[in-house]
Amino acid sequence: MEKRVPLRKCLGCMSSFPKKDLVRVLKTPEGEVIIDLSGKKSGRGAYICKDKACLKKAIKSKRIQSNLEVEIPETIYLELEKELSLANEQ
Image 1 (spheres, one colour):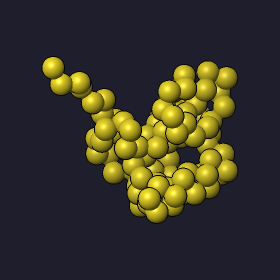
Image 2 (image 1 turned 90 degrees about the vertical axis):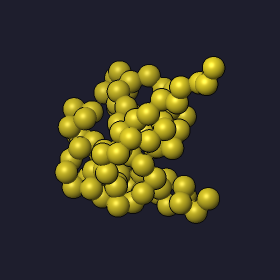
Image 3 (image 1 turned 135 degrees about the vertical axis):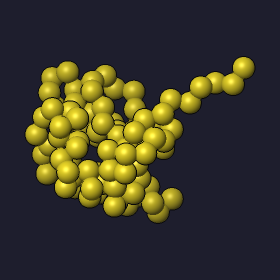
């Protein structure tokens, strides 16, 4: 039997992709916002595909903030941009 691939929606383009193809922004149970590259940490996750245009859309529309129900520090956005640059180089 074929294993089911979990799909998640990118908050930039609003398209669904396999979970492993997306970058996860996580709000931990303590309320801290981090980037979870493993996708395994506990907490509420928001997903962005590895496209800078999607990140810009998600930031502009504040979708990540509203999805996680918390203020997102600017450092997280900068870290995300760096991660997306690295992902696109590979």
